[in-house]
Amino acid sequence: MSLIEVKNVTKCYGSTTALKNVSLTFEENKICGLLGRNGAGKSTLLSLITNKNFPTDGKILIDGQPVQENDAVLKKVYCMTEQSLYPESMTVKDVFKWTKEFYPEMNTEYALSLADKFALNTKKKVKALSTGYGSIYKIIVALSCNAPILLLDEPVLGLDANFRDVFYRELLDSYSKNPKTIVVSTHLIEEAAGVIENVAIIKNGEIIMNDTTQNALNAGVTVTGPAGTVDSFIVGRKVLGSDSLGGMKSAYLLDTLNGVSVPQGIEVSRLNLQSLFIHLTNS
Amino acid sequence: MRLSPALKFQLNSIKWPVIIFYIVIYALLILMVTSQIILRGYGVDGSIGGMDMSSMIFLFIMGLNSFKSTFHMFSANGISRKTMFLSFLITTGIVCSGMAIIDSINAIIINEFVAYDPVLVQMFESRYNGIGLMTYGEGFLWMFFAYTASMMFGFFLTTAYYRMNRPLKLIISIGVPVFLFIILPILDAQLFYGEIFKAIGTFIAFCTGQLSGSPYVAMASNFVFYVIFAMLGFLIMRRATVKLSAS
Image (cartoon, rainbow over all chains, first blue to last red; front, top):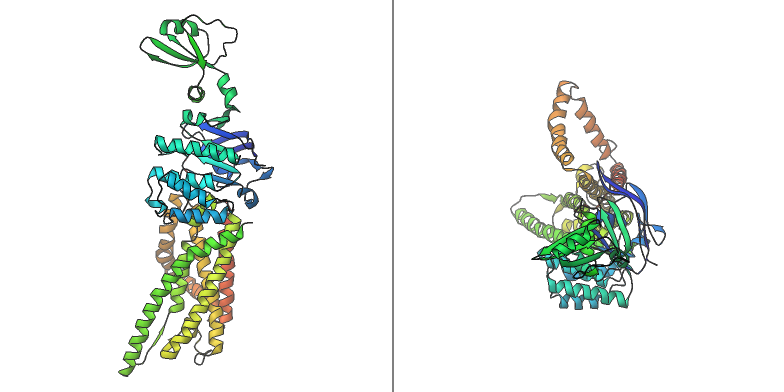
């Protein structure tokens, strides 16, 4: 099992409430996207799940056991954080070596092959790595440590498009060979949309959506056509947003349009996750 | 509890600093012993000492450097605070006993060439007539307890500083020296007519075994300090958090 349950968790920093009574479940062996704007509380939530921080109220369970100061539970989780928590003078090779000590199931050969794919020099010290490679060595550790639960906080930070593509491919490959519970917290929603099965959207410390990606996208549609026709069609409907180019317009609706006759010239397509996210998280 | 990898990491972290420390110490000892032998040729007698004090200072610094980096590393690898603390306790035991043994052996070797006065002999001159088996035995115990207390004091300070916010760090960093070296002497001289420093002196003399003339009192005091600093350090670190940027 590798089920994460967050129950009525509140986290306050002085007078600031980072998380407000958050309750959600990250299902076993599913890839979940944890989406939210900057400062929404994503990293705070991940840090609470991994015992890096303590909730002010509420509890977090993994496979029914509390995570707080629980080595038996914590060893099931690997969390890739935005910041490096490894000693700066440590080389990447040593990071792999020590990860193997803490996560005996780690596949070092796979880690070294990924290092080759990403053209990462494993003799380099952690402090000497660029932002992109600072993410890459942590991605490699996350993918090869074989922990049943992976929490990835901004995994593609600083990565170019080619390496982001390699990452998503390797993530799916690793997941298909060895299913695990994966939570991906990211700003690059469109890219992540292709891999996430469930989506949890966090806004100002509160969970405003927690559903399958399919259900979330089925809640709305995109209508595209001549600006005038689109404008008259969307009157009275819940509009998430719109984009115009020349005389054409795309409007994003929170409406399934079931049984609605669509005027000629208007094309109806699926809503994209990014539009939904932007609408839901706009203040 | 995943004690084994945690302990292995802690011991590995301290391995190179200890090796470098002893390379420096041996270089200094060779220089000092050689110069003593040369000076003896000119009829100048002398002795050397202070190796144990160097070890104490070194271990205090090791204690000061033992928290933040290790805590972050362990947090990244799913090790709890209590496992980290327990592994540190064991590390202090292993490292301090190891260094006490090395320093005892060094004392025996140096004494073959020139007179070597360990701090213990300097403190309890009347107890030790020359360097003998009892001196080495009691010396080892004295060093062990002094080293562990010193290392744990460093650990306590570093955990306390880690938990403090910036203004509090500033207040403590400036406030404590100002209080100890400026305000307290003035208060003592003006209001208490030297009674405060007299009491502090008596306390130090008691803790170091000078009042009783027994090194075992010093060992017991160091053990008590070790326990106190360990307890305070654990109380502070058990609620320590990894400070991450918010997103």
